[in-house]
Image 1: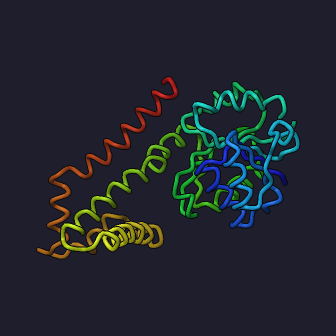
Image 2 (image 1 turned 45 degrees about the horizontal axis):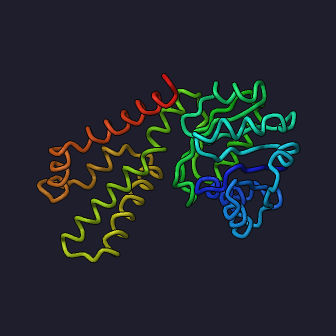
Image 3 (image 1 turned 135 degrees about the horizontal axis):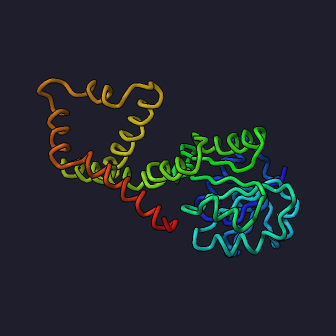
Length: 265
């Protein structure tokens, strides 16, 4: 097995870490190229992977090529590589808003997968929406197994992938705002900043795990905390009064509108 990773930024590095630590690929099976040489060197130092000096040469015999570049760099980068791709090479794209038709327009009838991971993949707790195009059942299963090393995987069509991206892809930013606000409130109550951040972040992480592990609807879990005439219901009422639900829903819909705009829809 050989995987060539094009782009050694934060997400590319997070995925490499997961692929190796999850035991799906060995470090010897991964080659990494980044236009910025220090990024290539750091990837080699951190993970023991092989630095690719010539990506066109490496993709020739690669089973998979992971395109971990920015959307604005995607077309030019993949176009430069397309004639060098092996006959059976499968392209994996994690570029946001780069549609399947756009990818196919560059590489033709070659097999590829459009994937939308998110930043918690850096700590193995990500969400990856995976949309395979032309892959066999075994190939799809391998890609799913590969990305499960970085969190949960949702196999889906492209329309669903875009929708998932507007929740899981942008969601970490909203959650970070919530954590920051919670920690600010804790500081206002006299808790020191370092403890405040730990408390807020751990509360969010623990609540998410509780929801996932129990499978109980969040409304039920919320009711379990809200005692009659207690402090929690007062806080919930304040959140409702200030439009938390509406703000969150509007943020996801705004991300969806921007996604469509970026895709020219």
